[in-house]
Image (cartoon, rainbow, N blue to C red):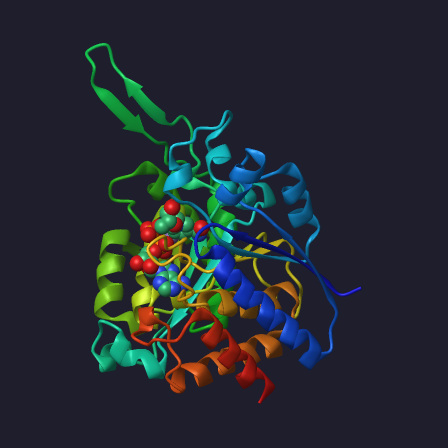
Amino acid sequence: MGFRILALGGDGIGPEVVDAGLKVIDVLASLEGFDYSLEEDLLHGAAWDAYGTFLRDETLEKARHADAVLVGAVGGANWDDLVPNGSPVEKDGLMKLRRELDVYAGLRPARAYNALLARTPFKTGVVAGANVMVVRELCGGPFFGEPRGIETSEDGVRCGFDNAVYSDLEIERIARVGFELARRRSGRLVSADKANVMESYVLWREVVTEVGARDYPDVKLIHLYADNAVYQLCCRPNAFEVILSDNLFGDILSDLTGSIAGSLGMLPSASLASAPVIGERVRPGLYEPVHGTAPDITGQGIANPLGAILSVAMMFEHGFAMPDVAQRIEVAVDDVLNAGIWTPDLGGSATTVHVTDAIISALRA
Ligand code: NAD
Ligand code: MN
């Protein structure tokens, strides 16, 4: 019967880069000889325009039954001010999807590509060899905490407020993902928090320390305040391997690592409902480029598809337990970058289709 894949392009450049990812899957299916079935559906703004909701129940059902979900990106000015009834997650189709599937483990890898070193803002010696994994908690923290809102007091002063809240259970499960990945890499885990000023991060630090001492004594755990972590990452990107962070700091840290790769458009992610186990298929899983909908370049056919294509590589690794196929895609990405076939964000003039076709040729070669 094969793998069941659901594709949700979303908004802006989302559908453009998801199309690129789907082409790569299709070629690999024939090269590697596996079957798959594909369903496509709308998410967020596109779903709102068609159905008046950011995420339909039936889309959620399809996602629950899929072996892997390929996501583009969501959001845009057309939909920012819409306030659907219900809880805050109703305002964002992707956040609701992550939350409903409980894909709390955001794996966001970034590496320095030799062909692109000069495209990064770093000196070559500083960034060469960098290979960082940000492990971002995706289903809790200040993006979801309640109460939240904007209230106007009697004297007309408006107050916006959010609640940064994490339970020990939420911290423990994401910490385990961080420790597992650190164990597979260098055996070092950096945890970023603001335990110096916020209670939720005091608990974060306590629980991460406990989990490490109890179950991962072989992993060297380093706590950094998030502001310092960002600074250190800018100064010495190749000194980091795995960074554990909450939903908020993980969002910021993972965009920052786009500078290591040479463009935000290069970065893939996997959003998983459990820690990945080598050789086992993880379900459910969303595979999504880190970038957003890039309204400034939407519809021009120049979006960098490599973040989405590398997300497909993560789909093969974690969703289908086919790490050799993931590797094959990564090699093809290197080949295409080395050949100078670059979209404008990398300083080139190739189109999305041009880069995607080059990846496919490299896969076939
Ligand atoms: P963005 O990631 O969309 O764009 C930031 C910059 O990077 C822009 O200059 C854009 O052109 C460029 N860029 C991003 N992806 C690229 C690609 N694949 N190829 C070439 N250039 C690329 O972030 P933003 O501008 O802050 O947000 C735009 C919209 O996207 C907002 O509505 C925001 O809410 C949404 N957003 C969605 C997600 C998501 O769906 N996961 C993530 C971030 C932002
Ligand atoms: Mn982000």
